[in-house]
Image 1: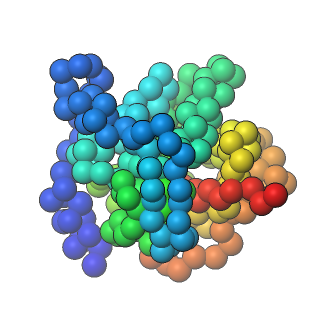
Image 2: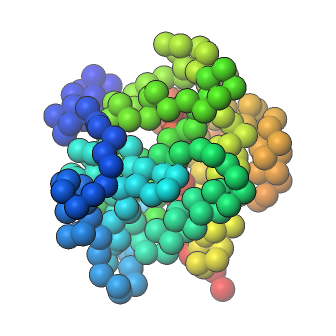
Length: 248
């Protein structure tokens, strides 16, 4: 099954190139054509069974962020609810404003009109977003894996968050926690909150041991407690967030 899924991703195009957005490339043209209208988005149903009206296309890149794969972007799964888009962009501005000189990578979101996005179980109504785990090597930011394409979903890390093929590369758990906290604060501005964070459960001890991890543990943000083995293994290279409207 794992090989079959990798093959499907490969058919869609797994060899990404980091493109500079300008008026001559395909990504720029695609974004201009499909970024969406000015109307509010409507997320129907649930993240696991839903649809999206007036979804907004995430910009391919910005000052300190980029979508992780060109072919994935052009094939459609980079749409979100307009409030989620505002949340994500605000969070990156907030991280930049506190002098974090890091580049962040967004992974798959939802199809333009929502609905099933294989092999994800959720991502159906514009309220789900995957984020690449920020990595470090020799205590410095490391981006060597961030643009390898959709096969990124299948790289593996050990239970301490170290890359199995090169254990000098590891997850920056403190920055993961800071990112989640920043996303929650940004979401609140737009009437949203984080409903759920899905992350490999073996990482929680490492995550909560960091400075921002301790704050995250006491924040009230729900981090999944238990996952089946397949889902757990699938979330060692990225963290998944489901947003929801704040109930009045």
